[in-house]
Image (cartoon, rainbow, N blue to C red; front, side):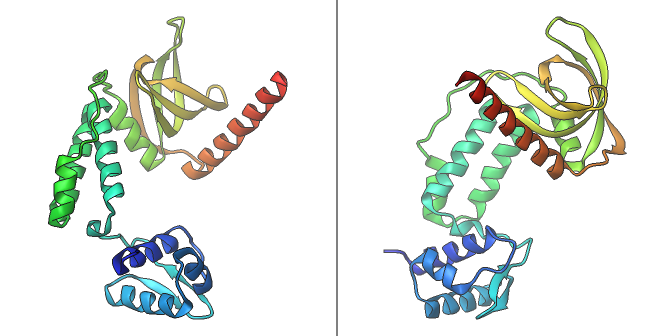
Length: 235
């Protein structure tokens, strides 16, 4: 049986998934409750400090920036967070590894006793993996967040070096290598750069002219189209 705290968390999660007002009827259907219960839950969440706007008949929206208190995490969510953090701590570059360890410590500090014990004694383990210094990773992540151009000197598979100005907007993490996804001014197209082939890297003051989210959407759309084309070629 769902507890009241679990139901309130479910309501918050529904609101977090939508930027536009969500009708009470939809919340009731997703949580398996009545409209009357939804109205009571909304009032209870507001009383606890949740920034929920709207009213009956118009729908409800959670104001951006509201954070769920960690004590409302479920056991599965706690284990997922700990497992992910352990993976990053074991396989990430030094800065990311340290951040993962610190994040778990901060979450554990505000969890109630039983959940804190679960986080500290989770039996979901990550074996040690390859780790390299990856000296440019922290700077590249910073450039992605700030939407800054980056000047790199890059070696291709044959060992030929070229100088590029790129607009970094995503990064892929694989077992043995990290790959930067960026718009390349030289090639006038999105290119993928292995971090271990970047010889030099300097984050520039200039911001690139497009928003990172737009670059990501265009890249994802192009990759899907390319995948469809490859599938059609094989059929």
